[in-house]
Length: 131
Length: 80
Image (cartoon, rainbow over all chains, first blue to last red; front, side):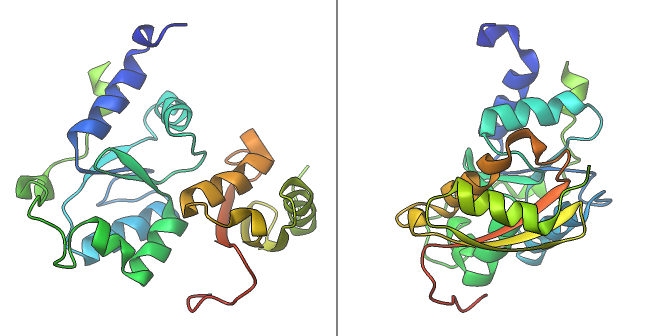
């Protein structure tokens, strides 16, 4: 099947490219439905890092297409500047080592390409509603 | 049939050349610490993918959750 017959994968790709910090998770940042998603959200929030979130639970195809696209089997998945950073384990290790802060430009070494502040209060993206 | 930590350990060690693994878990949620020379020069993302690839579609299904820590050599990292 050619790629342009897969609107869901296109929507996922679009969300990844449009949001500088994007978390695919189970549940929402306010109400995570899994401990790994909750821990990843807590790390981003502790850094006061604005991020967009996609809940994969409303439609199982979101997770299927995401994993096919990212070659990563588990949820959560954190994308920064369009690149998969990792899941909960990697995000936790990177947070503890300070690498995450560096990648996010929160350690004072990165140039000023801060994510849009309005993303802080943005509601979770609903990919399933775009279909 | 539920998976066991011993099964995961053996499959990781036979699936990744030179790997040694310590696996704990309750049959659904597992934690694996994997040390392998094959990881040298790889990003953490690629190291974790190598471990996930041992189990393919079983991750998220039969193996409900697999938490992974990887190291290229046996030197104990400060965070482990």
